[in-house]
Length: 386
Image 1 (cartoon, rainbow, N blue to C red):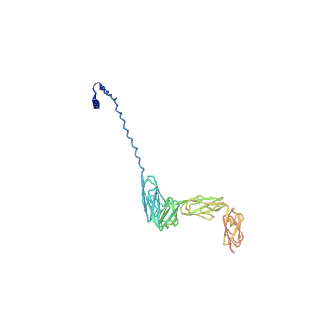
Image 2: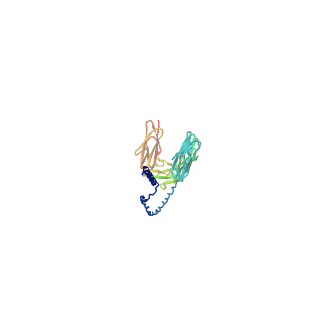
Image 3: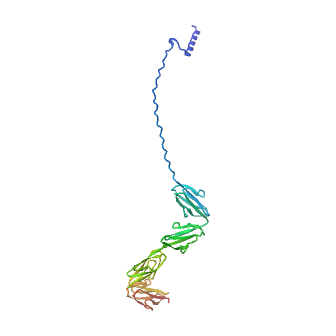
């Protein structure tokens, strides 16, 4: 075969293979049967998954109640009111909402040339306004222009003092600032069982009090009636009687008198006793005891066994009166002696004085005075300047 024929044969075979022409005869590869199909195992349907149950929302929490505080300013002056907790700054913001139960403190500050007169509405007085919120509140702060004067009231006893214009309510609020020159009238109202005894300080008497705005006034209330009690002491005996009537002590030693009543007590010693003197109720000495009823009071009358000798010095000069057994006047001008005793008293003038004589108890002249103590006796020695 020529070289050209061989090349032609080879090219023909290559073309036949590239066109996938099956080869005939023994050269064709054996056919390969397709594998039998394999049945896929059945897949169970997925079990249903329970849908998540809805979660109940928590019940709503009620918001705490709230209340409104409203501030108003008034008067001829100017000023600011601020709060704690913050919220009110009046001038600018004069109301605020707070939770119930909040303690709110309001402070009033006057501007230059003005004075804070006080609160009205939910507060009173001139201090801070402190409120616990249990409802809506309205408060007014009053400022005046110019100077203010302070009026103070003191109450003694049981009663109430109020003012026109308002401000004083004493009992509770006893001091108030008013514009100087304001005419303020005070009215006293006694409590049950008491009477108004009168004013002192910037007013007097028992009617309405109209002081200058700058003043300090005392209102005195006394019980409408009070008990006067008499007691007796000492080694002797005696009686005490009263005017107006009521006390006859021995038998009746106490009496109720209307407040303001003036009661006079007189002590009378029994035979063989002497009245030594009073104590209590503002009474001393051996003369009558006078008591003005302003409350319950106890007065004591002392009686001792014996007869009392009293020495009195008179005149412009000085000197001493003495006796055996007790009198040494200057220092001690009374002494008790057994009734029936004879007592001699002697007068001695001091340098620069002269003894002018005796009076009383039957004594006279310049010599010693001799007395028989049949009862209580008083002798007087007169000393003169030469």
